[in-house]
Length: 89
Image 1 (tube, rainbow, N blue to C red):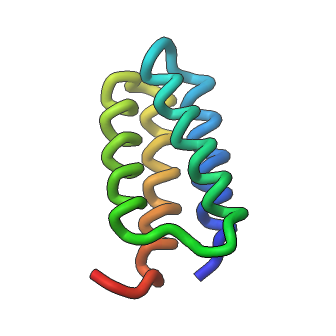
Image 2: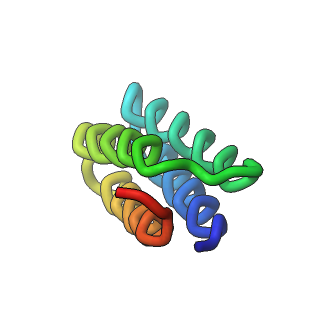
């Protein structure tokens, strides 16, 4: 399991936030910040934490649409790949 996937997800979300407007952009940027912090933390996030972020990403991406949604889905793919190696659930 590599935390680089979380950093990659954060980068995708920054691009999504740049492509979005208003509240959707702000929500995507906040999740990007949270993922960047998680990538650098001593302990990785658990399934519940990641599930909440994925829900927020998909909700904001649905509001933003277009290019933002494409970048958001790439972020979800990175998180899901990371999550597949996290013990539990």
